[in-house]
Image 1 (cartoon, rainbow, N blue to C red):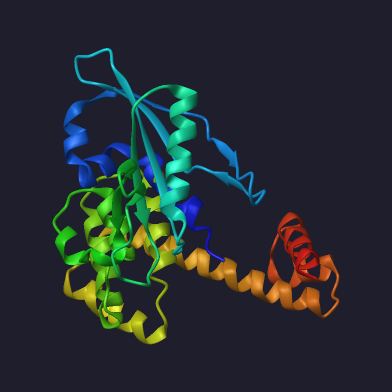
Image 2: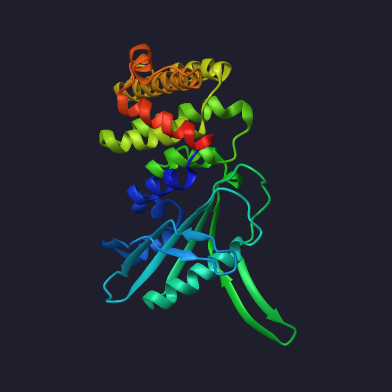
Length: 283
């Protein structure tokens, strides 16, 4: 299972300014970038269902040349939910009550389907009275064309192109273009790996697509780039690790001991024990 919330939270918190620049340019032009402060994650309990919800990202920022602060709340939504606008309003109301500051709410809709426009407001109306009209900014990735972001010198663009509206036959080309853009950004190794890992998770190619991808890489001249070689080496290590873990899981199911599995796969004791624990949880 892909931990969508963790991947998006990691991406946006690391490249917060770049995200604002890319999708919220008006907000970006109004804030003092030296004042950005990420606030502790809030956990809310739905009294009706008993479910606990944790908001994704909350930042406190100050207007330029003013002493006035406001909050930017960013939420990633990886699946469709009819009651989601209502939930966003609940978050807004509770955050507003706690911090007593204006809140700019933003939602990233990151699911692949459906591609219909998602609601971005929650309203309470009567025939003679409009009680509430709550709106939030919606960034629905599957309705954005990846081609519109090809020339954006922005690490968030390099990552999120992998989740935009991509015809199946263009998946290998998009992965190559994500990497091409990434190699132009001069990021430090840790941030570069964060983006490349994000792209690799969401554009996990099959063997046929992989061949097309390699041809696209050669065509745009990436294969000789040192940064590209570092990224693909990391992917190869990740793939090899995944294969070793799959073999270890099969061996555990066959009743083989931890020591036998360590010798056969080269995994550490901690890695095998972690796999053993996860297998026990499933059963």
